[in-house]
Amino acid sequence: MRKILYLLFIPLLMTGCKEVKNHTTDYVSPAPEFCVDSAYAYMENQCAFGPRIMNSAAHDSCGEYIAQKFKGFGLTIYDQYADSKLYDGTPIKMRNIIASFNPEAAERILISGHWDSRQWADNDPEEANHNTPVLAANDGASSIGVMIEIARQLQLQADSNKVQIGVDFICWDAEDSGESGSANESSWCLGSQYWSGIRHVDGYTARYGINLDMVGGRNTVFYREQYSMAYAPAVVDKVWGAAHRIGYGKYFSYEDKGGAITDDHLQVNRGGIPCIDVIGSDKEKGGFPSTWHTIYDTMENIDKAVLKAVGQTMLEVIFTEQK
Ligand code: AHN
Ligand code: ZN
Image 1 (cartoon, rainbow, N blue to C red):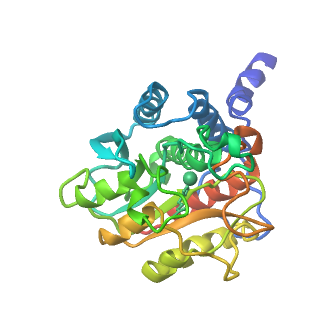
Image 2: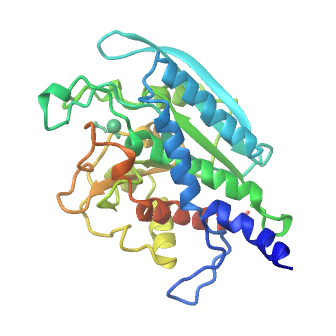
């Protein structure tokens, strides 16, 4: 008997996740529990490769890791390999990784985030670090870690709770090599610019998109970003509404403190799919998180509570999306 009980507990011990929901309201969500320890481990694994800078072995190996994780959870992988150039003319090889759940479904939603790391910690307080690559735990690995855990949850569900719509996870490359502090907007988001012109599947479209950026840092709050409000206000309402419904309202603020941010969601919008940016801001100072483009963007500065709020909110949105 003791042995049987022990075996029963193994799955819980392995994931470190609760199975019981614990909400402050009596709303019962159809979504499964987002396992933040899993998302965190997927981030650690990405960071263990080192900075994921285009044309590096760490980058290419991590791309393989990301694709294999999604594939292992039963998703269909589409790769977009392309040549591009940084604003200073450096040639780069980039890879957008698209992982599709229910690839045959006509009704789809898109969730995205960038997986590359910035080459230069040029916002670091120490000038000596400005040419050091960013490890990009928050500004890179966080979105991908959350997306892989969502994919795991999608495939884990029994048929009675399976999501019927299609979900596409797009991991953008070459988002973060832009020209700092310049008006050169097109130097950012090279992977999504490429996709906006040439889709991974001919004629691809989606109901809407949600781009995740810096979703795991300490002291993070999410404000309603201004391009998102202009292009896709209903999607902002949907996501912020979902967060407040399940008890994560303190992370998804309705205060009008969001900036207008050049990010991958802009390219999705320009490609005709309404898309928002869920991008972390510093809770005290506003603006980008304090570790942004510094050598301190490491796993020690990740807050699991923030990751959990974002991951659970995303699952809430997906599992309440009508077929
Ligand atoms: C600009 O600084 C113009 N955009 C920032 C987008 C970004 C960089 N997100 C993460 N890293
Ligand atoms: Zn960045």
